[in-house]
Length: 273
Image (cartoon, rainbow, N blue to C red; front, side):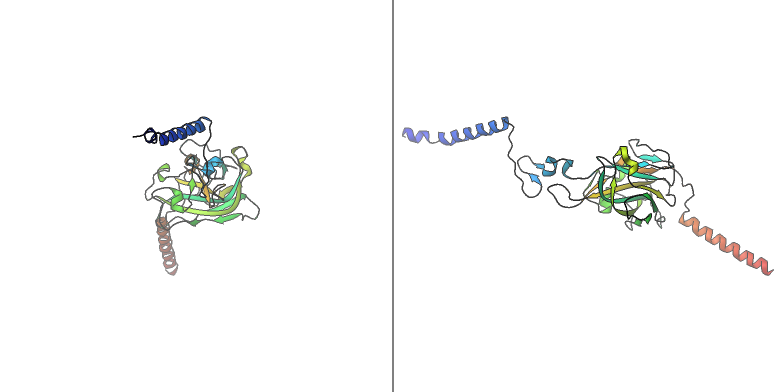
């Protein structure tokens, strides 16, 4: 075997060693290969494109409730934001605010059959053109009993996550009522009261919650679609007080109606006698 034949296997090895040395030199210099693949991803780093531009791949903000007006201040206790005033006056602020988007309010009430009356929201301060009051609608004909709230409502993707385990456990889950208030601007915590403020025309059942979603588009600088900023679990307004005007149970209303009918019949008989 000739010397030229023996040296051939060494050439690929030398090429590989040179390529490896070049790669090590690139890494040592801090260089990275980057390529945008059209789907919002950086192949060279395996990182969502939006994360290169901030906001964790989207332009959503985390929301937090607060009490306003005559409602005593309510404080995030790490679990929720409780108030014993029922009905309360309240609002929401956004981390990194002011932040604008389509604002959706959601009220979680312990499930009843039939469901409670749909809450009506009085809007005391909001964007121009917003009505002074709006009636909520029942989001689903069945109660929310599992998974997260955004999935139940169809508001995905949403952040942060609101699993049902983050809320007080109630028999039968929650009936959820929603109201879309259109384009609104939520302020930072320091300027929270400059954003929209809300009241309720009637009390909510005890152990209810008020949360919000703020829809933003586009999803990120490199992705289209809608993303939802959700309420922090500890920032959900928890109605930990009995209604100032008791909310009659459906069965109680039926009994009251029967009693009134009997009394009316007795009064007519007495007059005839």
